[in-house]
Length: 162
Image 1 (cartoon, rainbow, N blue to C red):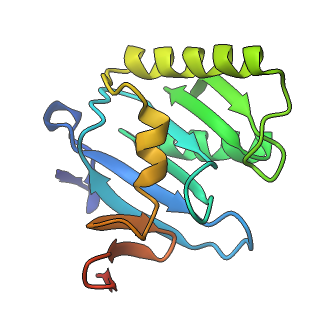
Image 2 (cartoon, rainbow, N blue to C red):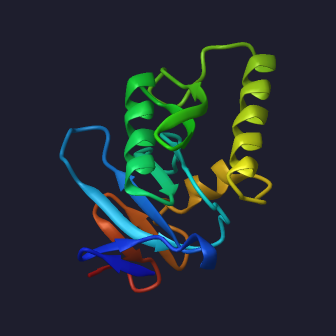
């Protein structure tokens, strides 16, 4: 982790990325922020509105600009999954039914997921299921640390961490 102008920056060379959860149901403005490792991204961001249990927008990325672009793409699709790099959407799969369900035939959904995962690999990740991993980082009922729109949760101690 590094600081630049008083702001925390990701360090992709050490696999330290930014993780953000944006509340999407009540326009509360709540945003949880943390650092995460294990994704291996060298650039870009990925985001999803399919994120257990609250189904807020959860995103992981290298830069604030790409994280923001990913969140805005999810909003524009009214939910779904997206991969962004340098502010540009590389791949997306809209899930406009409650932000959870895709209104396309299974073959198109499978092709869309394959394209999304291929783009994530292009950005440096070797995770087999990056969107599944992302969704579980926002599930505050499994140990040990999870991120919600209220902040970082120590699930074992059942409390928010400053």
